[in-house]
Image 1 (tube, each protein chain N blue to C red):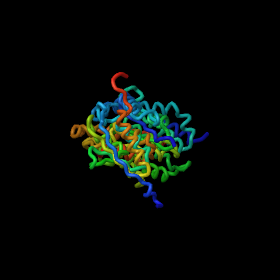
Image 2 (image 1 turned 90 degrees about the horizontal axis):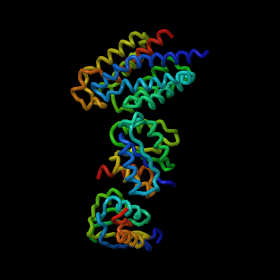
Image 3 (image 1 turned 90 degrees about the vertical axis):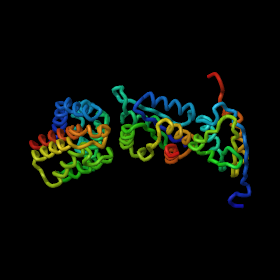
Image 4 (image 1 turned 120 degrees about the horizontal axis):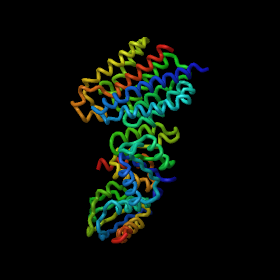
Length: 103
Length: 129
Length: 202
């Protein structure tokens, strides 16, 4: 189909935040930056039924306040939805690439 | 295109520099960034010439957003914009947002490749949240 | 010899002199209801203009005025740097190289509008506008006698005394700003008097 809906994907994923301070400012920046590299619409929420916020919005993600131990749910819709969710889940799994303890 | 640049203007050079440090730490090196604070006598205040120089240091053809703290910083930033060359004036926008948080939010948005209008809008969204 | 250049230089000297003479008074006024630096700032700004008088006055009227304005923005600082800078830059903005009286009066009004926008103020808020606007009105009404203009300027500055400030640092004092002349009004009136004296002889 011309507008690409035949190739649009929908994807979801979930990951527990292990990062000490949860989703605070710096992880929020990394999350939104990564989300913006994908064309799909991407949302995140604290349950698989939402409420959902736009994962590309730094203001919304910073305000989101997900603590360590909570489960972050992602849902995406678009041509690269599967890759987007996989990448974001992986970012969380890697503790947002932050080192702990020591400079 | 290079990302939009961010300029931080505070009455205090320490605040301005500190805010810039936070931006660098959280957002990285890819966004053009400059800060200025204090008046030429070394006291608290802002200076039009210094603001113009900061705009130049953070210049990007995509434009520049300016974060300011209290009243005088905004007035002097408006004056600085007015005194820019014709081809730059329209591309510099002042954000109505808190100076530190606004700078971080603006730089994050800029790093994502957004236009100067969207960067300004996003910083101002912070105030409205 | 370009008579215009001589006149421009004389104007600079006259204004710089009056500011220097009244710097302490302006500081005292500003200590009562402001940052306390108006006299110091204005003196520094006009010293810089004076130091560059030969270069500035060699330029035709529009560039001279814009040059003075730019220097004031860069050197005066504080709250009045942008305001006086905008005033002078506005004066020179759309002025023809050989302005008529009508051109100057029109330019003055245009410059005042720019100052209003810069300072986000209007008449009656205890600022330099409270002197500039009444003087503009006199000029627009055709008053040419420099003594009358000077009197109007000083009367307008006096009229700021009982006004409560709603703009600038003074506005934080609320009722305590009543009973004090606005420093910007005073410096405006002094400058108008100095200019008027020079033009009277010209």
